Amino acid sequence: MSLNKEEKKQEKKINWKETDFWKEFWLVQIQHPKFLEVYNKASEYIIWADNLLKSIIVSLLADGHILVEWMPGLAKTRTILVYSKLMDLDFKRIQFTPDMLPSDVIWGEIFDKKTGEFKTFLGPIFTNLLLADEINRATPKVQSALLEAMQERKVTIAGKTYELPRPFFVMATQNPIEQEWTFPLPEAQMDRFLMKIIVDYPSKEAEKQILDTYSKNIDDIESILSKEELLEYQKEVEEILVPENVKQAIVDIVEKLRHQDENILFGPSPRASISLLKVAKVIAFLKGKQQVDFADVKPALLPVLRHRIKPSMKALIEKEPIENIIIEKIKD
Image 1 (cartoon, rainbow, N blue to C red):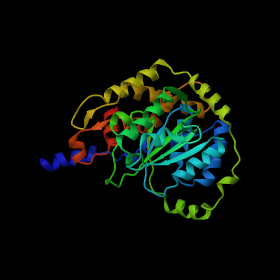
Image 2 (image 1 turned 180 degrees about the horizontal axis):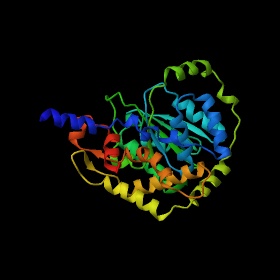
Image 3 (image 1 turned 120 degrees about the horizontal axis):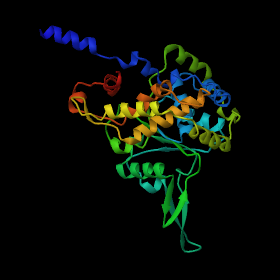
Image 4 (image 1 turned 180 degrees about the vertical axis):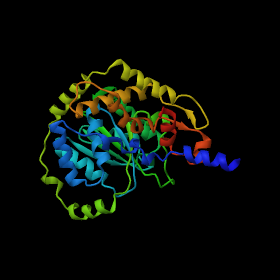
């Protein structure tokens, strides 16, 4: 009897990496001529991370931020640099450490001996593209300062409010293998990220191509898109139509994941529904469509939802991937 139960359990077991959901943005065929040109050029410098390359374009058009989980040495700085060149955007990188203060990210003051006054200097967050490298090494105080600025798009210093540049995009990375001197982002903070992307090692074939292309000079890249054009495209994305049945499908999916069970402690907030809608609009835009259908929602499900669900202790003990839990709940 127990053997039959175990067999049934194995039959039901999902390997999410073998489903279409795993392909995520690989399924998205970019047909918009301008962004297809940007993507193709970026692919010449970043050979293997197709999922990440497309997710950055999607996030920029949706005016959101992404959290990326990957191992060291997988070209995260190079990826953002390539996009900064292609879209003529300012770029800064912050390497987070446990001894950092919020002022290291937001702003700083230096005493001027000549005038006898403190001078305020705007921090590295005042840029278009920000790589927040290993954000889980920063203390919760520093994390919250960055995430608040990401949400509000402005910073108040000594009673004066400074608007962050537009467009403003943060790619925060987490190293999943090290635990010492790390401070995992709370679920409430991760909810501020539009998507969470998981990047794996390249295949053998891709790694061989990397050996042939790693020395290509990024400084030689010419911009294809301007800041002003990107902001205009963001406005065009907002105008994409969403039928009522697609909105209802998004709400139904998110609501299913709010039901507590043996695997879910708590589910996604309404921000998840908004994020699914925004990403689906971008996918429709990149396909050259004027209206969203459910096929545009499906590639967004795992990237948008995987970091917004708190797994139960049972799921953690059994090491059940959160992606399996999501697919099991919404597959009907």
